[in-house]
Image (tube, rainbow, N blue to C red; front, top):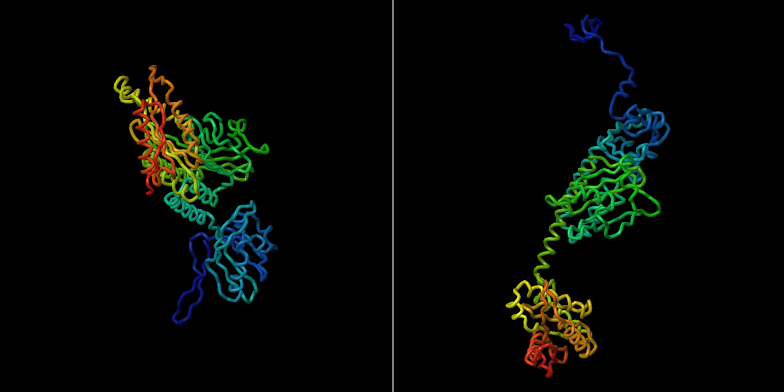
Length: 480
């Protein structure tokens, strides 16, 4: 029991104290500074120069410094350099009698990382000190930053014009949330069973553009398993032996997540740290997996678009440009030739006895013959030239930037010789040879269709003369 002093209202109209006996246990009496030390927020007092005069115990939790380590130091010493000027301007307003209840700035924690602080501050004119309450809002700011970053990644995933741009922007955004100085994107080529490094920023590691799935690297293990992996010193042994880095550096911490397309793993995103200052965790794993899912969507969309473009421009049997793409390249070649006073030639050919081969051996053998013809033609021309399959057994060759018509004749002779050699197709020996016609710009024609028509007519002259030969247009066409 203890006496409780209460005020009561008397008949005289005044309040007066009265002692009341109560059975309640008296609350503990704590000194004022001990009560402040129980607060989660930091309560501090600074002088006009911002020097700490008094700091509550929460400083160690928020800033990493004990109160005795802060007293005597100025708040600007501990503040992030980029926030000092703006804070000094704000302090002048506070010292002029305008309290601030929600301004924010950043401080450098004793361990080196950044902490975000929200302040409630007031100037006491009589005492000539500033009293402030600091609340650690680092987690809130981190959550806000992460949410904003996820929105930006989603936006980039929809707006990036190409994959290299996407990878660079994603790297930039991730770097605002995680230690991402060393970041790579590795794609898996299932057809060749190899890894292709599509993007890599790493000052120590310079991986080969192509790697084996059995290379033992973190990216290889993530792709092989299809699961996200944390790479830490205590689990690093499997990779340290196979890590290929420059200057003898080996990753200390790493994080890899798979690029998952349905049930298939098409690649991996990998972060690595060589200093040990960064330790990735499960939360980072979830964040990076979200990013990986966005990247996968773009990769699939890009591949689908590329495949559709390819199907629209290339013959599916021979993988050569189709008629539309051949005409487009011929048109562009003519524009260059006209601008720079150059020459070009169109060679038009088909294979003798192709219908009989189809009828005798079947269309499968005929398809094999066309593929073999395409392969042999490729060896007869330069990489800058274009071979197109225009339909059936008809092919055309664009010889870009030749110096004289005799250059086209040399190629025609090579083509006749290469395509006249017997073909061994699925165990059968097949005999065929080309009939070929040549038209040259500018003497024979001035536009794509004119050149192709003239070369086609010259080809039929070769065929009427027995085939297995070439023929060049004899008479120039009218300009058109």
